[in-house]
Amino acid sequence: MDKFLWVGLGGAIGSIFRYTLSLLPIKSSFPVLTLITNLLGAFIIGVVVGLFEKQYLSSQIHLFLKTGLCGGFTTFSTFSLETLTLLENGMIFMAIIYALISVVGCIMGVYLGKMIVGIRAF
Image 1: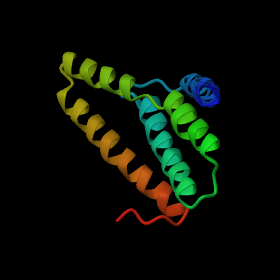
Image 2 (image 1 turned 30 degrees about the vertical axis):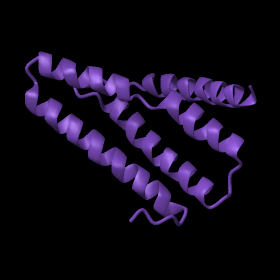
Image 3 (image 1 turned 135 degrees about the vertical axis):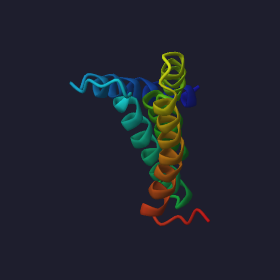
């Protein structure tokens, strides 16, 4: 039961962080705040996994940070909706650029996060 509490607490905090970031006064037809959230979340999850692999984090803190906090913070479902909305609005080039930056950037974020704590990805 305590695992559910760790995930729930982390998810609540991650969701609050996500909402707080969404309040930044940035107005654009390009979903920049979701992109920033996904890139930051990917980096954080890379650091968390790297620290766990180096045995610097307990399994409870790992669960709290990775599944809870990062799960509540990142916005891949919103990314998917916004990409589809761009396509539906005829903004095909912007949708492709947004999807490419998001996917490649988030993979790089996880890689850099692991590298910063000394875990080699390849």
